[in-house]
Length: 470
Image 1 (cartoon, rainbow, N blue to C red):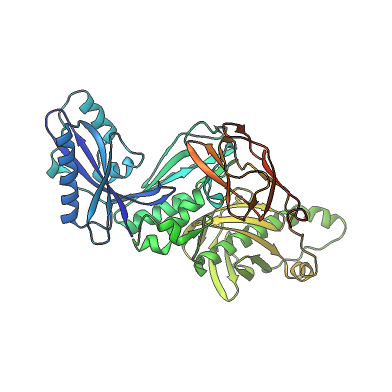
Image 2 (cartoon, rainbow, N blue to C red):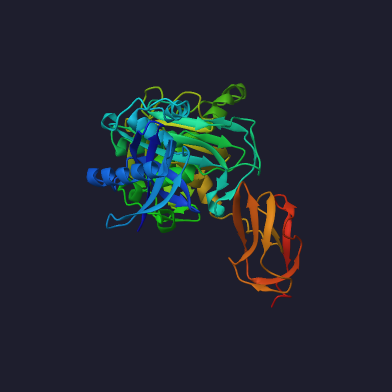
C-alpha cells in the first residue's frame, strides 16, 4: 500500500536550499493526482526531517536553483524511494503556501533575479492543514474520459478558508487541445478535519453546467470514511470507487438530507403554482383550504421514503419528517428555482445542487449524486400501476464519446469481441483513453483509422446484428 509523498524545496544562487514540508499526493487516477494535502498524516517529525534533508541534498548535489519538487514512494514500513524531481512549481503548490504562509511564486521570481532567500529553515513553521481538489473536465463514470463543450453556468465557491484558482467562466469553451484542468479548490483549517469539512462545503456549492466535471467525484473522495481516517494509498480510488461512484453506501443521515432537499424543492414549487391559481379559484367560487401538513413519497435507487412537511407557524421554519425521523428545517426565500439550495437542518447549514423537471429531481450533496422521483401519496399509488419505459435497445455502432485523435484500432473486421474489451484508443486533452466494447459480438466493419480526427458520437466501428454474430 504505497503512498506518493513529495517534498517542496527552493534553492537560491547563494548556496541556500530550504524544504517546505511535504505533500500527500496518493489519491490518483490514471497516475495523475486528484487530491493533495499538506502536511501528510503518514509522516512524523523525524521522518519529515529525514526526507526533507534528502531532498535538499539532491538539489545541492545537482547545483539546482529554483523552486522544485522531489517525489518519493513511501512504503508501509516507512521506507521511502526516490521517484523523480520536477524542476518547477507543481499544481498543488498552493497547499504548501497556505500552511507555511509563503508565496512560492514570489520566492521563485526573487531567486531567478539573483536574490538570496529571505528565510532560514528554522523560520519555516507550518500552521494548520490544507487540502486541494483538482477540478477537471472529465466524466468519472466513463473511465475519466475528457469532456468538451461550452460552460453555460459557472459559480465558484467563496468564503473564509476557501481558495479557488480557476481559469474559466460562463461562456468558456473547453476543447481537446488543452489539459482538462479547470480549477483547483483548497480548503484550509486548524487541523485536517476542519480543512476536510471546509473543502466538502466548498465543493457542495460549486456549480458548473454545460460540461461534465469531476466535482462530485472529488467531493465523494474527501467525504469518504477511508479518506477521513487517513487510510490512503495510490490504490485508493481503485479500492473504494467503481465507475466513479463510491462502493460504500451513502450514510443514512446524508441520504435523509438529500431527501429533505428534494421534498423542499418539490413542495415549494407546488405551493407557488397553487398560490398563483388562487385568484382564479376564488373567481369561480372555490374556497382556499389551509393545510398545515403535506405528505409525499420519494423514490431513489437507495429505497423509498415517506416524507411530511409540517408548518411550525413561523415564517421559513418547518418540521420535515423522513419516515420516522424528524428534522427542523429553515428555508431561504425565493430559492427554489435555482440550481443551488442552502438549507439549515437541525441548526447546521447544508448546500445542495439540484436539477428538477416535474416529478424528477437530480440532487448532489457531499459527492453523492442521485436521481429522485417524488409524488403525492395518491400519485404514488397510481404510478405503481403505470408501465415503466423500456430501456433503449443497443445500436450496432460503437460511437466516440469525445472529440479527439484515433491513436490505435485494436481489432479487425470479423473479430469476435467481449464486453469491456479495448477496441479503440483515442487521444484528447493530452490523455489517451481506451474505448471499450459495450457488448459481446462480431465486428462487421471499421470506420476509422489511426491518425484520424473524430468528433463526439461519430461511429468508430459497426457490430454485426445479433443474429449474424450468433
